Image 1: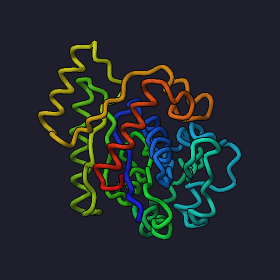
Image 2: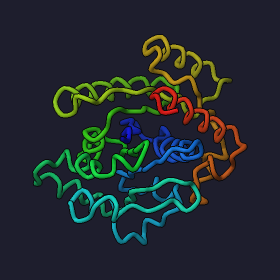
Image 3: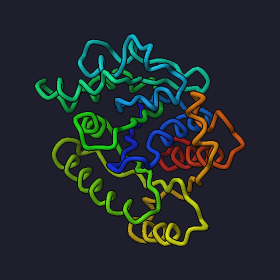
Length: 256
């Protein structure tokens, strides 16, 4: 049965999509079956996996409105070795349409039930806001992986996210928990980043992943080629770190 995780942070620009596609590529490199669910109307995880969001016949939008199954809408990332439930601008309309529907926050969970046996991991790339789409992701997931920059404002955003997760856990999804915090875009030369990193470890203990993702130009360049950094330049520091993270994640969850 698949372990389902949201990659979430209510702060924008913290590397959620970069984390999602590179973790997916890293997990598939170590032999895991992975599905990426793109829940962001910008469709960045879709494009970053080498799938043209402008040419989609079916997307996660159709799945949420129950007009298509996951099996019908998913596509294979051409070079990265994992499947994608893609998204495009249509998904922005789902916010409005879902409000009036029954089980509006459990649509994704219901759709993934039939696919749980076909994957080891399902990674859900959430938009940077607490919307109906994010809520669908949180209701479907077993846990949340939080990518974080080690900066002061990131700590403030983290407390908001932790409160949101607690509320969803209490009211909608008792399985939901924080799996771990991933330090991303890390530059050890910056004293503040080291201080925030130490604060995180003091406060969250073993919830902070050991792997640290360094700030890396090759990871930033990769999406323009429609590839995760792990595939685009496997020898780069960022790619190596993400493969290490994939191994740590699998080990932590007893899936190594």
